[in-house]
Amino acid sequence: MAAKVLLKNDHIEGIRYYDTYRKHGGYEAAEKALKMAQADIVEEVKKSGLRGRGGAGFPTGMKWSFLAKPEGVPRHLVCNADESEPGTFKDRYLMEFHPHTLIEGLLISSFALGSNATYIYIRGEYAWIVAILEQAIDEAKKAGWLGKNIQGTGFDCEIYVHRGAGAYICGEETALIESLEGKRGNPRMKPPFPAIQGLWMRPTVVNNVETLAAVVPIINMGGEEYAKIGIGRSTGSKLLSVCGNVNKPGVYEIDMTISVEEFIYSDEYCGGIPNGKRLKACIPGGSSVPIVPANLLFKTAKGETRYMNYESLSDGGFATGTMMGSGGFIVLDEDQCIVRHTMTLARFYNHESCGQCSPCREGTGWMYKILKNIEGGKGKMSDIDLLWDIQRRIEGNTICPLGDAAAWPVAAAIRHFRDEFEWHVNNPEESQKRNYGLAHYADPIHVPASA
Amino acid sequence: MIKFSEERLKKVNEIIARYPEGKQKSALIPILHMAQDDFGGWLDAPTMDYVAEILQIKPIEVYEVATFYSMFNTKPVGKYLLEVCRTGPCMLNGSDDIIDYIKEKLDIKEGETTADGLFTLKPAECLGACGYAPMMQLGEHFKEHLTKEKVDTLIAELRAKAKN
Image (cartoon, rainbow over all chains, first blue to last red; front, top):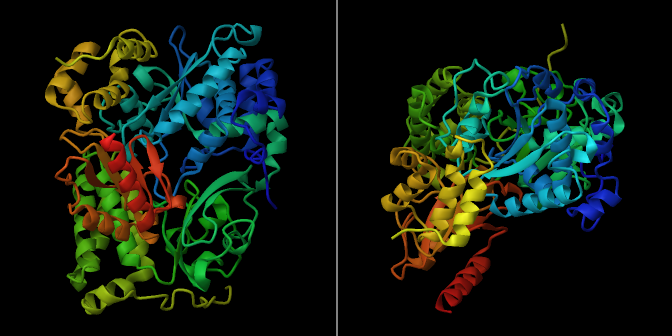
């Protein structure tokens, strides 16, 4: 079933402007929230089961409840709009076409958390979106939803857009805070967590764009109603950005009950794979999450249907499953080369490592170099084991999760596609002329009878 | 002498006012963007020193930030900077061919500028347009769904624009 929650007014022309947004129910959640006690808003978010939409999936209400409230110290809400995970462009869509949903979500969340100065940290490359957001902020301010004494409540709130300058690492919340303080984006050691000492050492909550936008329907519907959408601990709707080899790349909203197979092949979503090609592999949650071959995508190792939600996608752990991640859904058809694709991701992480921790700074460089050799027909068989060894030594040994994010794609590629790497090593010349192809990656998996 | 115009200085002060008193360093990245736009598309030492002076911070604090972020150019670039994404999703949709085509067409290598000073080609890592691949960033805008024909048209337009 298609859940239209965040994008329910997607078809309405001019929905990015205040008057149209207001006419179609906009700022009704804000009206309601401003009459509520702050703790009750947090309670509704807790009840909704909303999990952080940036990739980690941490329960939002719980994150909010960690916020320290020392007397006389200002607190801040920061919106993480540094969307940089390869495959992910959903926040861009939301900000570009539904800016007021974000602004309304920010106002409600700022009120709930007591943030009088809220910042949207947007990746530098989304330069034109800055103007869209600033216009929405101006409109909201003129209508009395921002500024001093909002709607007579005595609550003051300003929202500022802060543009970054090109650094994937600034999507990590402590690096983002450092960057917002005018420094290099080097992640901080935790603890202290931002909820205690964040921006300018003040208590800070950092949430993703989609997460904060989801606060609007949560207040409108009530947390319990919102939690009825979806399944299990995957409540509410989720935006997915689809790219790679599909007929209809773009941004889709789902309610996390549909199967992966339906998502790829139904006309409502991806519309299948172009030119009648067959599916080879998929990275369902942004480049950092494990790539899975076609035969583990539609069914779990136990032979059960795999669904588009947090639990089902991670069924089987990293051995046979993957993750929901940021919702950056990357599809690879039978003509794609796993080694080359992995090499581009290794290059990405090498480029984006902040350089603070040795395992990541050095390890990402080595992985890129080795993958480039294998891809170029200059690899040795021992390189594959070396790659495995390097990724293992990065994972878990760095201050921030960029190390893990760099290690996982390499590990998963070797885990599931080792024979394709070996084929490159054994056939250095042929591998420069053609791809390994689909091979056996879509063959049905033998499911052992349950014990 | 490097100096923002009066109008731009007003904007600079408006940006500084977004942050608490004494935290004016937070305005560094937004102001470096303005400086790069106003003073020739890249940041030389005198420009960075000027920004340091405005924000009352040490020049080294500006240098370390300018060298960290990929959007700040610490070397001269052409009038038009073509930043073509080449990460996974764009690669799946033929970004390598687009990069090769631009190299051949403009007769430059990656990171180089054409002799007439008009174009610099810079391969970029994921820019957040994966569903509209292949793509490039040109100034403050994205050019998406690139084909060789689109590259031809774009380059012709930019050449014509530079003449006027």
